[in-house]
Structure formats: C-alpha cells, structure tokens
Image 1 (cartoon, rainbow, N blue to C red):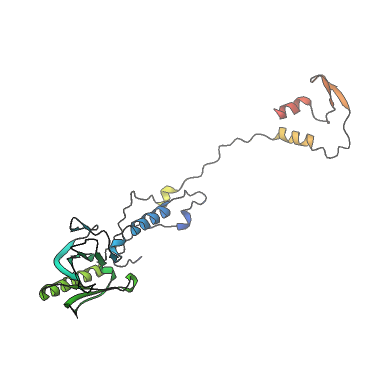
Image 2: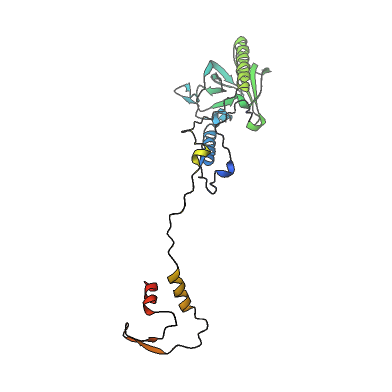
Length: 252
C-alpha cells in the first residue's frame, strides 16, 4: 500500500474473512478495535484540519498549542479587517495553522489550518496593503484580511507563511495520533487446535427396549390383567420378551 503525504499505516490485517472466527479459528476483535480507536482519534483532532471561529484558542494570553504544534512567529498589533473599523489583535504563525485573536476579546478569534488555505497574498484595501487569506470551499470559502505594519513586516509574514505552508503540504500533520497498546498476535498463534469431544456415549440397548415396548403399533386391545407379586397388584400382561425388572431399569 502506497500512503499519501501525512498518511500513516497504523495496522494491517490479513485474511479479513477469518477475523470473525471460522471453524477451527479463534475470532479476533482487532479489526473492530482498531477502526473505533482511529475514528475516535480523528474526531477529537478536528482543530488540526477545520477552520474554527470563536473557539477556545487562547489561555492566559497564550495560544493553546496542539500536539506537535510549534509557534514560529507572534506578531502584535495586527488588524483584522472583517469590520468597517477593524479589530486590533495578535497574530500567531505556527507549523500547523494561522491564528488571530482580538486583544480586547480573546473569544473573538479565528484558527486557519494550512490544510484549508486556498490562497494567500498581499492586496490593496481601503486600509492600505493587507494580507488576504482565502479559505477552501469546503471550509466555507472565507476571505480574511489582516493589516500588518510596517510593509516590510507584512512581506516577511507572507514569505514565512508561504514557506511553512509548502513544508506542511509536503508532510501534513492531521493530528491523528494512535499507538497500538500491544503487538497483535499473528494468525498462526491465534489458531486453536480442535480437540476430540470428551463425551461418553451410553449404550442405547435399554432405550431401544423402552421405545420398542411402547411403540406397539399392532396392539388392537388391552392385554388381560395378571397379578404381579413384585408390585402386589394386577397389571396388564407384559409383551413377550419383556420383564418388569427390565422396564424398571429403563425408568431408573
């Protein structure tokens, strides 16, 4: 299997049709547990991949870093041009994303992963030259403008972001970290040898005699009663070849 950039092979299962446990094979829950664990890791790491607005990004005026995330630059005094008057805030450039938050209200923020950046360039605006970031259509197709002064710092920021975006594209970090708790056993070790059943089969002579006695299909009428000394009462005369003692042994 040839993996794509950022894709990691976590587990490999052979003979998938045997994981359910065929005759003579011990079933293995590896397929189920691996898929569930990786899916859980994927669902809890969306900050790496999704554009987020007004998220819990800042704590004590510091960016809450994601696993394996590193801050490469922090720029103060950056204006977000989403409103007519703009909002003054702080700009973070990391190896995974770009983050901006307002200084007066840290909950007014945006996190833009490199995965969702469609284009980034410097354009003219009514506020002057600005850094304009367009997000992908899947993330909503946002157009976000940021004003960084002076122009030299603006150009340096663009150059740094383009460089980090190029590195990220070559080796993306999707945030899905998963470790096998224990090395799965190979199928040969999971194979269980079938042992013969430890069952003793009782001879069925008595059962056959019991069945034959009551399966009297040719019986037209009751046989005449005779006195049984063993029972002390009158009973129907037994069929030829049967004894009262033998029938009692069958019942026992």
